[in-house]
Image (cartoon, rainbow, N blue to C red; front, side):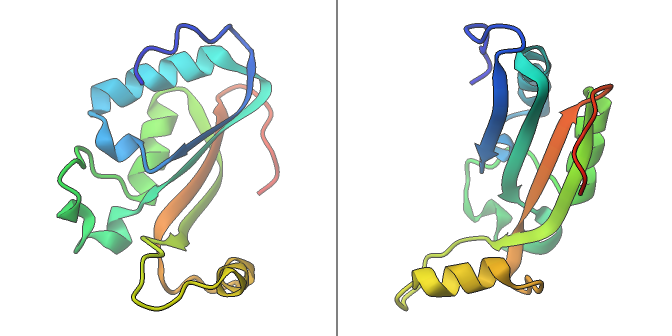
Length: 138
C-alpha cells in the first residue's frame, strides 16, 4: 500500500479508499498521500470513506487492526497538512456496518442514501484535491 511508484505521474483521475487509512500509521498515511499527489491528474480527486471516531468511538477498536484515530475534523487537518484541500466533507455518511440479523434490503439502502438525515451514520466521506488545483463545488 505504501509503494505506489508503479503509478505514472498525473495518470490517475479518481482514488477511492474505503476503510483503509485507519489501518495505517500516520507516517505511512503521509507517504501514501505524497505518492497520490504525484499520481493524481489535473482534475483528479481523492475520495475517502472510513469510520469517524467522533461518532464511532464506542466500537472503533472492536477492530483490533485500527492503528490511527480520525474524526472528520482531524482527517481534514491531516490532509491539509499533507498538501490536499478538502472540497467535500460529510461527517455522517454511512452506518459503520450494514451487518444485521435482519434482511438488508437494497431499497432501504437506497432510501438511506437519499435521505438528508444520516442518524445512523458513523462513517465519514471526504473528497479532496491536491492543494493548488481547482476543486469541485460541494
